[in-house]
Amino acid sequence: MITLILIHPTQPIPVNRWTFKEKSVIRIGRAKDNDIVIYNAVVSRHHLELWNRESGWEVVSFGTNGTYINNKPLNQFFIKDGMVICLGNSGPRLMVKLSLDEMNKTPSDEGVKDSQSSQTLNSDAFTATEEMNKIQQQKEVLAEEKFEFEIEDEDEDEDDNDNSTTRIDFLE
Image (cartoon, rainbow, N blue to C red; front, side):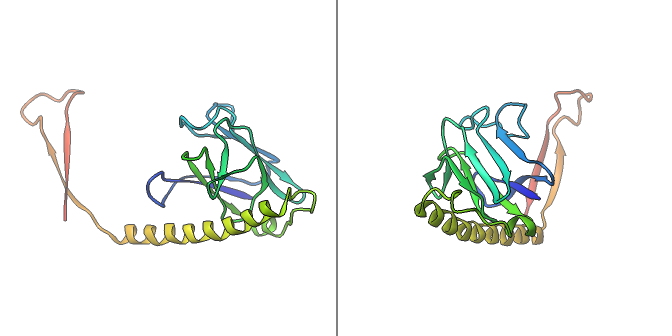
């Protein structure tokens, strides 16, 4: 099982989540025929695919703007749990969470292109785990905060119509 979490562009909080249990290929891009559709200018129509190999999940990038790990463009690599994949240099970020079965798979020697790629993936998994911990801490802080608000209808004297405006003021 693999879970992909779309991270908010300016804050370390999750925006959306997709879980796949028995899929051999997951397609990600802007086009509607993808398994995960992300509408963003830097995301290609068919940006990347995740392949469930015997040795683990592998990413193959087809995007014009590239796929990045730690600000380094990579065309093909194996996924590690907690890794954050960036679609385009400044595009949407997807965090990868693998099930225990998936984490126990190890890429074969032929799957690792070179030692530099392997080091990049290992350091990225550590960085992604730190980022996920920060996300969890922020979620806990947000859950503890309570907001009170007043709703004021600005069209009280007029008939109800579709053009009415509601103003919400947040109080501290």
